[in-house]
Image (cartoon, rainbow, N blue to C red; front, top):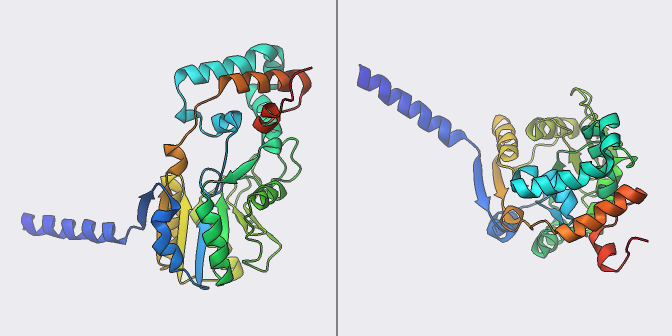
Length: 290
C-alpha cells in the first residue's frame, strides 16, 4: 500500500511538472529564431523593455536598476558620491525621495538602443505578416518627479530605438482599475502597444488586458530578463489554456558593463551643482563643468 501511495504521489508530481510553463534560458534572441519565425497573425509576442528589448549604457541608471549586480566597493563609491556632497538635503527629504528626483533626471536624458539589432529586423519582418507585438514592462503609468507622463516617456524612448508597437491593437489607452494603485506606480495600464504592470504581477495584468480586448491568442511568446516574470506570464497562459513559450533573456546580464567611475564623478558633480544631468554622449562630446 505504501509503495502504491508513493507511486501515485510520483505520478502527480510528474503531471504537475509537465503542466508548468516552458521557460528557456537564452543569451541571444537568435536562439529563439525558430519560435519567432513561426509566429503568425494570431500569435502575441511580448517583450520586457529594460535589459531585454532595449538597453542603456548609462552607469548611474544601470546602478539604480540593478543594485544587486554590483560589488560592495562599487556600492560604497556610488553612495559616498551621491550622499556626502548633499547630506543635509538627503536628511531633510529622505533618501528615497532624493533618489527618485535624481533618477527621474537621469531617465529623462538617457539614450537607449536595441539590445541586439537582429530583434529590430525580425520585429519589422513579422509586423508585415500581421504578428501582434506588445511590451510588458513593470513601470509606472503616471508622472515620476520631473517626467510628466511615464507612458509617453517610454513610448518615445522605444521609437528612438526604431521600435513601435502602437499598430498592434486599435486602442488608445486603458487603465485597469480593478487593480489597487500602488504608490509611485498608479494603476496598471496600456498605451500605444505598451502594457505596464505598475508593480503588479505581469501575468495578471496581461490576463486583464486580454479580457479587456477580448483576444485569445493561439500562442504567446514572452521574453524577460527576470525568471520570476516569465513564471508569472507562463502561469497565466497555462490557466487560460494558451500555449506559451517563455524566454529568460540573459544577454545583458552576461555583458553587464562595469561602472566607469570617471564618468560618474563628472555626472554627479555637475548634477549636484547645477541640477542638470549630463549623459555619457554629452560628456564624450566635451561638455564639461564651467
